Image (cartoon, rainbow, N blue to C red):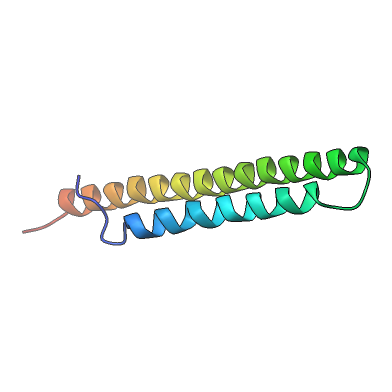
Amino acid sequence: MQEPLNAQSHSGAWIFQAWISFILAISATTVGIIYLPVDNWTKGFMGMGMLFSIGSTFNVAKTTRDLHEAKKFAARIDEARVERLIKEHNPL
């Protein structure tokens, strides 16, 4: 089966930029938490909050991607059924 025409591939530059921006954001937030003028309990609480937020973000992104992939798969199955019906009922 051929790849759909609307299949997107990410360039190496885009992937690099995505990882760099992620690493910079996490690093800047971590440095900000470390240098906050509060006690260590507060810093620890904020660090745990940041880690839980990162984990939840990955979870939501994966769930969204999985739902999108499932819809694409169902659409391909429906398209294959329609093509088979057209071929079976083609009067020519």
